[in-house]
Length: 451
Image (cartoon, rainbow, N blue to C red; front, side, top):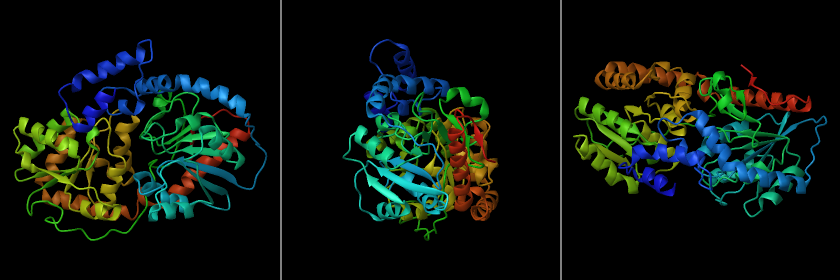
């Protein structure tokens, strides 16, 4: 599996078609072979049901061990009445990270009359401004990076956490073993991992009806907790002026197609589509995020498709403010599949750059579509990949239409649900309150819809 992960990160696609069959075989074969659930999210053709099976096989032995450890810890919960519900947010990304940028304004907006908010960090102790802002946003902030899972579980339990919100899932650096000890009476899968964590880990997954329609419920171990609009939080941070095209490494003229998704999300099929768009749009360039180990391969892939590799422009990694400012230079953002843009989609829209997407079946493939729905731009959600190409071609060849679309986005940015922090926070608090009501009433987790 490491070789597949490395090949994806480097965009080495010689063996691309054989990866999914290999992983499917491993998921049903006896023995110790395990497929990391996160790796499966970017594999074309893999279903949400297969992703659930992968997650449950990945955690099977650890869930057994966790059950034994829970018995030894003997954690008991007080479900009596209380003035405030205590929410514990668990992550290793309480620093200058995409998760923090998405969530911080919601944390600051929580209703302290109804909720007590605690943060549990097991990442590196970065003392930058975002870390300080996050620590101040919580009513209590605890660094558990040096604690064992058992000791961290004891601390969370001793703090009286009613709901533990896991912000990492199976992403890099996660401590799923701590979540599996179930140190809180209600546990929630939210934001960091776009899929199920499997049986026995979390009770709910915070989602929306676009990302996971009700018919998808059997593919998830968690009960759906539906936000009224997009499940992803987003703030309204002020935008800095855009740099010049020259300062951003872009040519002075020509249409700028853009995708700042990580290199592992790119696939040969998507690259085929992008090459066709470049071929159909003379003078255009494709602006990608810098990925030193992948850039040579991507240039070669573009040459194989008959496109001058110089039309690929690679953008350096920048801090959040500078990154959002330069995104204002993009004419149109192109989404990937089956792992769509998540934070990068709302980054683009918050900067005024429209994005075209083609949703699939899985959570990971549908996030950009949910975000576009919440910002009032469903016309950018393609019905299939032919439609994806047609939308992108039309916008690239019709400056007036593109200008009208960007004007609509600029207006919607100030009025639609995606950037309304107060409404978002009230929505997620309504979900938390209903989760708690169900728990103290003795009800099993079930679909919650506060719309």
